[in-house]
Image 1 (cartoon, rainbow, N blue to C red):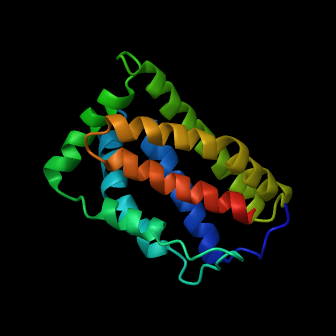
Image 2: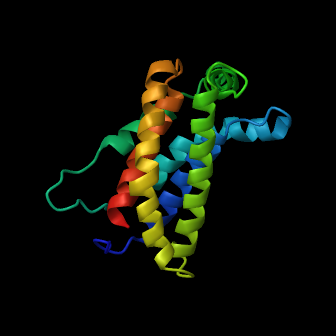
Length: 186
């Protein structure tokens, strides 16, 4: 697929950061290391606001489509949740949703696979965006369209049913918007 127009550096940085946010979020907290847990909580609490600030201002609209205001709205929703007690409850919420030793083992496998797929997408985007291997951008677009879009949709449906915090559901919606946009652009 031929890109509609080259992505700006601003857009590339946003996409790389957004995909990294999703990968780290769905990998989950590392309870064995207090610093790693603190880093994950900081990512969840501050990452959406940082991504909202990085949103490219002049995103082109695809022919025949309307501007997409969903991504800024989702990031704003995630950014508003900065209550310290709420943030402290997130590791338990993550484990309730995705711990492999619970009844949610299938959901845990989905989240783990999503994290791995997003980490692979970061590698493809980085190599494609930096010009080391321009064909990697096209591979990233195919991965987004053919693999990630269906998987994130399935994960989002599970989260819509089970996520009591709304954080992981909103994060999945952010990732769906990013993946769909990358799939169209690359």
